[in-house]
Image 1 (tube, one colour):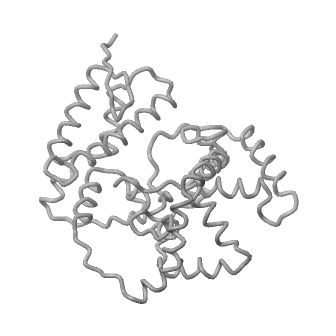
Image 2: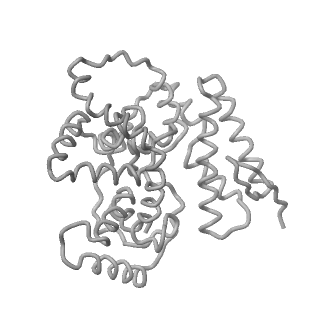
Image 3: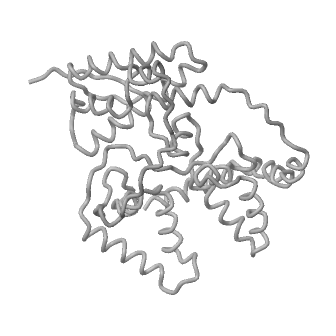
Length: 312
């Protein structure tokens, strides 16, 4: 028998065993102490605590456990890393490649399982995403587009429906509580002209943002298909608001070392000025952005509905 305590992390109440609480409390105090002199320290710590709460919530929901244990806290610390871990690296002045380009893995060496920890309905879409190590949002978009017949293929809606049902029945489910290191697609608010979709795609793919915007303009002349695609992606894609969101956008694991490095890069002043030709090319986008901002309250309801429908 162990004594349990109630704690509040990022607005969520958890029950935690007493020994696990002592470890977690020491860990959080070390984080507070280290980041207290950083600019925006409160936002940084709040973001870290939000990630901790997300991990604990996933554990509670997937394992159906009543209390967070020492094992859970140890796994959390191993995942995020400790202050001492990257302080030692800084003292040794070792610069490591942070692109996380691992050796390619053969998809044939893995097993396909439904992902029960990130499911919206049956976990099929998130399972496919885990198998191919891509963001689940792309799989869900393809399924929604196919189900509603938005692509010119006969009976594709029926095929998507029955394929999903068969996979739901035939494929076993699996709980994945560990965060994935693949890139997640967000809209980029810092480089946006309208909604940050093109900037988000550029960050996700590594493609040139200027080229993507030119292609977006060209697509408007193909029966407006580009505008429809843009609005659809805008409606279902979240915005990268926090530092850890931006790290996920480039595929960086959420660790304390990476958080600190990104903070230092963020405070570096950006001396690059916008060229006149760039302002001219972006003027139509910015004019449309002003119109879009005026219509934003109306489109919020459409966005909520699209996000609800796409969560299959």
